[in-house]
Length: 144
Image 1: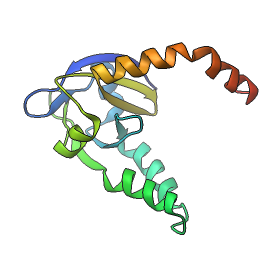
Image 2 (image 1 turned 60 degrees about the vertical axis):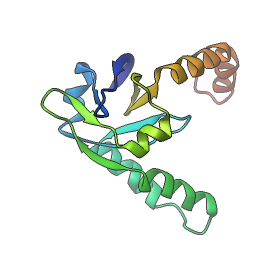
Image 3 (image 1 turned 120 degrees about the vertical axis):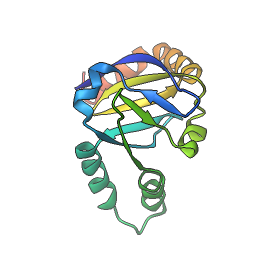
Image 4 (image 1 turned 180 degrees about the vertical axis):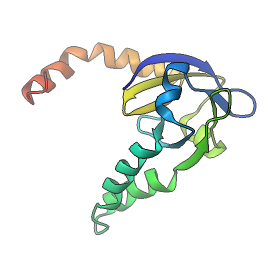
């Protein structure tokens, strides 16, 4: 299970080290793609296959289905984890997420998210301020 928050540096060659505790779970290759909320999603190959299967199974008859397929599948890149645990972030994904030198890598159960550190701080503060409201909504759905 991928959980926790870790600060890292995106080097000048657009490489970032995955946290050591995640490397065994991630394997030798990962898929990196557009995420939501201006971050990047990083999946293991097996988890990506599940996501891609669900996306490709959506009806192509709706604009929303076509759009999310193009966004997620069209923006996906297979990348190797090098011998010291780094992945290369393609330039178009770096620009999409607005990644600067300081990044935050977050484990979100079945995927990793890569955030620009300042964007993460802002998002995290906003979410913390809404935690009680979010918990109420989840309680109404029977999740909490």
